[in-house]
Amino acid sequence: MLLASAEGDHAQFSELYRRTSAKLFGVVLRICPDRGLAEDVLTDVYLTIWRRAGAFDPGRASPITWMATIARNRAIDAVRRLPRGVHVDVDAAIGLADGNTPADAALIAAEGDARLHLCVDRLDEPQAGAIRAAFLHGFTYAQLATTMAVPLGTMKSWIRRGLIRLKECLHADD
Image: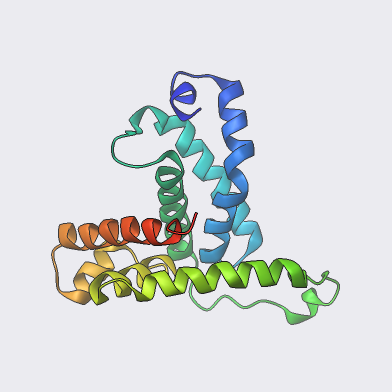
């Protein structure tokens, strides 16, 4: 679908959006402090995907990984552009519906989270720490490379190898 989108196929791009928008919105929403901002970022993400679909290289990453990376980077950029010290009126939240996850969905998610954390704990420390910082705390590869005093290429390699090992660990029982 992504390659067809690169050739201008609107129907395939629409199907791509239908299949991936929930996941990419989740990626963006974890980084953006505001749902409205996250929705704006998601729009920008899909515009970028549409424009850059021809640059996708199936030999380097899966389509969802490529798109999630775009989403993550756009969300980080959007958060960086926010003014510091933004205040939200607490009274505006009174009429909002409870957005808590239903108990059964929370249990299933907790089980998946526990498995993921177990797999991350099995990684070597530089990889585990870098993956936690990048994907749970929103640090960029460049920030991590600077913080850990390693070249950017080394940081990218650590994270890539760590993600490969995570994938193997998560799919070991399938």
